[in-house]
Structures are given as structure tokens and as C-alpha cells.
Amino acid sequence: MALLLDLVNILGGLLLAVPLLRQLPAVGYEIGRFADRIGRWAWLIGVLALVAGGYYLIVHLTSGPHLFHFEVVGIGVGLALLWDRITGRKPADSGDGPTGRALLLAIFGIIAIVVGIQGLFTPN
Image (cartoon, rainbow, N blue to C red; front, side, top):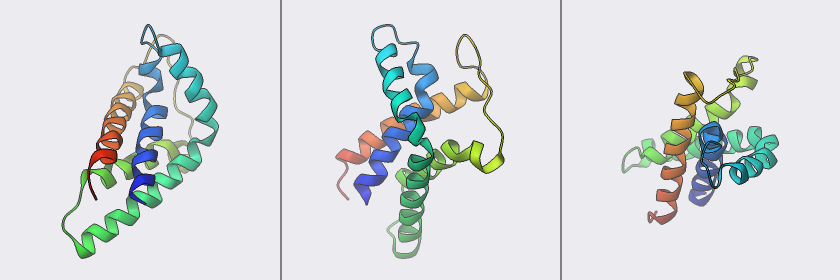
């Protein structure tokens, strides 16, 4: 279950950070193509992030030792990926690059990628 949380943090972070990662000169196009392929599964990754993050949130709040950042980021990734389904509003698309909320979500996506990679190497 911990591996699932780490993987959805990485994949969800990648989906959130795509507008920023597409601007990388050497690999931006390839990252964008990969994200376009898994983009249709964003809702599933969001649901898995909410379930895995919520599970560990309940486990760590009831039996300890304390709340970890892995589950908080997982819940945030799940909410960010499912936001258009929850509210019914589509996110605004900017032409040149991410600005405003899109930039904030892209930075949160990079943080989620780092947290997911950290979770892969952190013993449970």
C-alpha cells in the first residue's frame, strides 16, 4: 500500500507538473507525450491517491507514530486531479506557460514527484 501511495504521488505529480515540464528544452516534448498518454487515467490516479493517502492518514492518526507528509501530499494530489470532477469546472488553459493557479499546481506537482521518490527510498 505504501508503494501504491508513492507511485500515485509520482504519477499524479507528473500530471500536475506537465505545463512546467513541457518547457524543458531537451526532454519537455517526451514528458508531454507520456503525460498525454496517461492523462486519460488522471481520475483513476486521483482516486487511488485519495484512497491511499486517506488510509495512511487514518492509520497514522489512530495508531501513530505521527502524521507523515507522504499522505498529506497524496490527498492533495488526489484532490487536485479530481477538482474538475468535484466542482464541475474545467481548469483554465494559458497559451505561453503556466501562470497563477496553473503555476501553483505545477510547483505542487514537482513537490509531489520529489515526495514520491523520497517515499520509495524511505523504509516503512
